Image 1 (cartoon, rainbow, N blue to C red):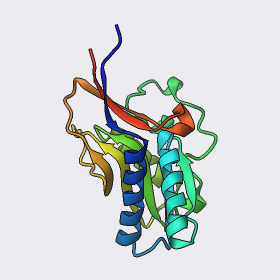
Image 2 (tube, rainbow, N blue to C red):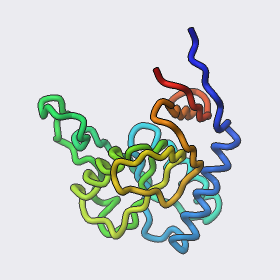
Image 3 (cartoon, one colour):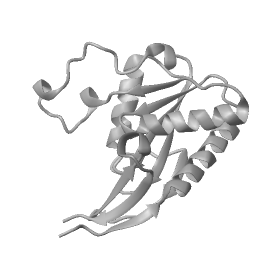
Image 4 (tube, helix red, strand yellow):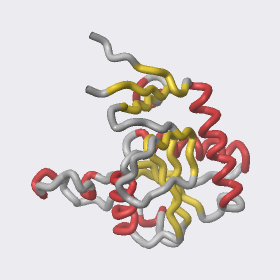
Length: 181
């Protein structure tokens, strides 16, 4: 039996949401000077790159873009032997020290992924500030975290799942919602 999915955002809606986020970032930061975009792997990095490209088109300046691996910072990995080898820093310190970091993720839910990303960022150095951009905010926070930039607010129940597909990883751009069992 196929699970019923409802389309929340098609490719055009995703593009428009990211364009709006680009304008909001420029406005809030009075340009992009001293800004860095950091995408939480995997889809957050694609969102960060797309918004950076849009800002380059609008402002004529490039925004540095990096990614962050939060594997070692997740609070649901209790067994230290399950954690990945911490040989490499979670993010390049040159991208964050003293800079305005805009952190990107696809879906904001409990806030635990973002908390892990902030811990990893701070381990890499001290940013001037951290802002959060998400494509979808679905609510149900367990931690006091709120996004600065939101593509779409989608009130959900805990029995629903939001799935973001991006062309770089999935061959198409769309956001769907479905019932979980």
